[in-house]
Amino acid sequence: MIKRMLILAIVWCTIPLSLKGQPYTHAAGVRAGYSSGITYKGFLRYSMSAFQVEACYNRRGLNLSFQYLVHWEPFRSRRWLVYSGGGAFSGQWDEKLSAGLSVSGGIEYMMRDIPVNFGFDWKPMVNLFGNPGVDLLDFGISIRYRFSL
Image (cartoon, rainbow, N blue to C red; front, top):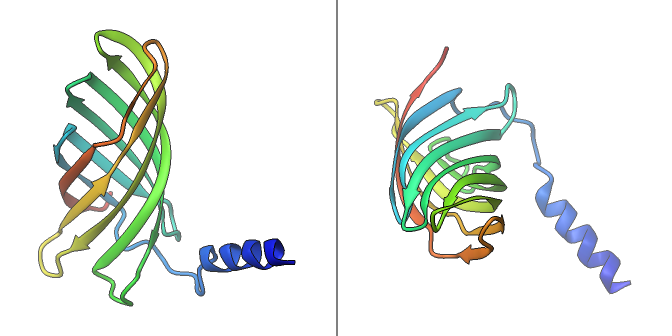
């Protein structure tokens, strides 16, 4: 009985209370931190979910990551977003070809008058192919320019 109630509470918290459109369509910029490089985020149409692609370099090597992210508006403000998600990465891991999984969680702020957003995220990675390993300390700050095509 308690397990059912816990599962129901978790499901209830993950379902949005109302449908909302995406806050912006596309954003591209840079990420600085443990992994530094370029980043792109594109929202799905009429959804608060997005795909994020990053080409970043860290002490392990150059990696390309692809993630699916779900966003929430925690403060009922259209300028603050909290997000989480995950995906795959591939590239160098200690000078060997590698592939693995990464998860991501963060918060971002969208400026009102300028089409720029700022984000802070945590992106731990687990390498599964090539040279197995774990990298848990991937914190970063992103600055992106928002645009529509």
